[in-house]
Image (tube, rainbow, N blue to C red; front, side):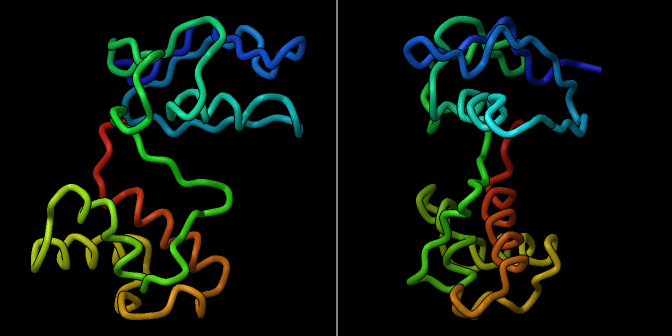
Length: 155
């Protein structure tokens, strides 16, 4: 199976503190992968580096063989679901899910279909017109997941 993500000896230091210390791993295309560890061990920092929200002090990150170490977050073929979810409180469920697509220039029926398909995928069919603030925590998590998946990231 082809390697989708390659992390080679990645280090991230904040002054004298090494948040990530020499991590190397390969994730195959289609593989389900979990980072598991104690609080403060560098999981979130490594995810930020993979997503392009932080840069490694040293080491290399590659997607499908292409070095992404210096590529900004908005140019990487990945999407991120933040721990705080980052949902827009003034938007409906559908507008939250469709936000990225709208920025890409999609509109009308094509946008509506993609949003509804993403909501179906996370078992929130029909929730599009709802106020985001009236959803349960689990429903909000699924809206955030739908918002990431609707963009059809390469990784």
